[in-house]
Every structure is written in C-alpha cells, then in structure tokens.
Image (spheres, rainbow, N blue to C red):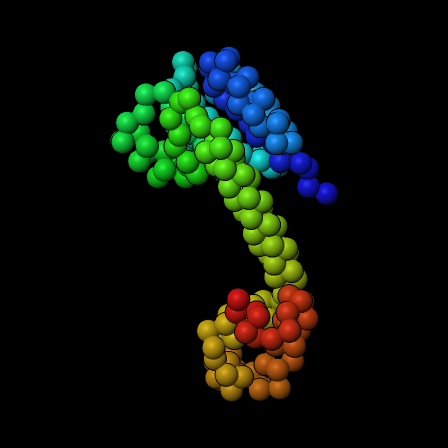
Length: 195
C-alpha cells in the first residue's frame, strides 16, 4: 500500500515555512518542513510520494544545487521552486532541471496549491509508470534467451517465417516461443507486447 503523499517544504525563512505548512494542511495534505537543503537530504526517503517546495536561494546548498543532487541520486520527487529574487536565467535553469513550477515569493495561495496538486499528480503518475516498468522487467526476466531473440524480432514486426529463417528454427518453433512469450509477459497479442 502506497503511503500518503507529503509536501516537503525546504526554506531557510521560518515564516515562509510555517505559512506554507498551514496552507498545505488546510487542504488536507501532509507536510514536513526543513530549514536547509542538507536537513532535507538527511531525512529524504525516495520511496515517500509527494512533492518538494523548495527555496532557490538558501545558505549552504541552494535549492538548484539540491535539485541537481537529488537527480544524481535518481530521486524523482517533483519540485516547485520559490524565489524572492528570481531572474529569467534562474527560472530557465530551474525548469530545465525538471521543476514543475517557479513561483515568486510571497506565493499566491491558489497558485501554490494548484502547483502542489499538479506536482503530486505528476509524482503519482511517475511512480505508476516505474512500477509498471519494474513489473514488465521482472516478467521479461523469465524469458529464455531464445524467447528473447524471438521477442526482439516480433516487436520489429517480422513474420513467423522471417523469424524462423533468421534464427534457423521451424515456423512451429517460432509459434511455440511466441505463445510462451505472451503467457510469461501476461499480454494477449503481439500488438500489446510491442506497446
């Protein structure tokens, strides 16, 4: 069972942290606050769904540096950047680094909440996609080397005859392997397999 999404707020300004926490709690979402990037990194659990509301400029590690560090460690938590002194270059860098939004302080409550909901939905979609890919990879690991050879050619759109010729096996052998592949990967057709 997936845990409830959490909005992680990282900002060195206590008033901003508390204000965002109150706003987020007012719509029934969980929130955890951190006063600097390192404190967040020390507590970060990549399996925890949610999003990150992150101040761009903080003493020590900046918000942009934290985002880059998270990306290095393959933490995919969606980020909403907040800034009191943003410029176009900083905004572009933030968006290129995968930010969901770049909002000026003090944030408009509705704009921030809309962004938070969008980020949480994005995170949930990413987690579903990753779980599906993991499931497919686990099922694909059950294939024999010959089944993998046949599957590679099936997804290229080759006919049973072409596959049989290329692999030096009978057409019946290809059909047998195709049936095993579909069963092991839990799909009903080559079209679904290709997807």
